Length: 185
Image 1 (cartoon, helix red, strand yellow):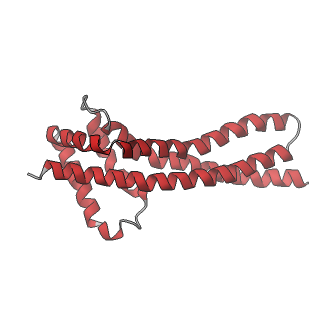
Image 2: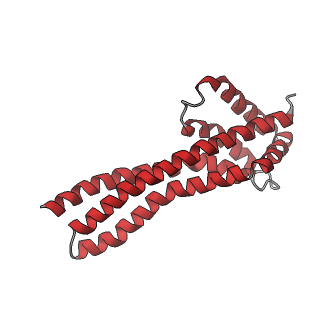
Image 3: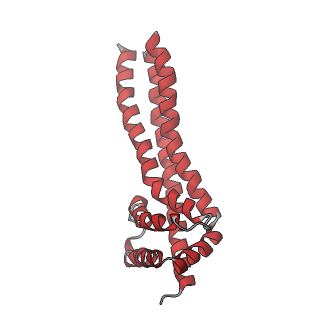
């Protein structure tokens, strides 16, 4: 039987490291999205007139808020994970002592991370988050955990929120090109 305290600490360290890397990545994606989306939005305002201008004012602003807001939401959630690291250790310990499935998932996750320790900095954050989805599913059934389900939700929804922002970058990039053509011609 593995030491539950050590296992809980290792898992919490892994989640904290993911949160740290994820916060940096989310900030960068938010800035990139704001620059590309903002420039495309302004180009659309300059290149359109009449009812198209009015529609773009509302639709473009909503799209920009959603595209920039998604990575900012991910960053905020991950910052909450980092603030509650000490509580997470106790909740992970509680979870793995009650649920045999959770203990197995935690062991597999921590063992997976130790195997890949030499390439840990090269591996994308999104790859690591998949390891926690099974643990999130197990933790939902335990009623007295307050911080752990939110922390696991933050880690597992991170890739989706970044995808929303990156799709926004692509859409704004394409629209910006067409708005620039409309503005110039």
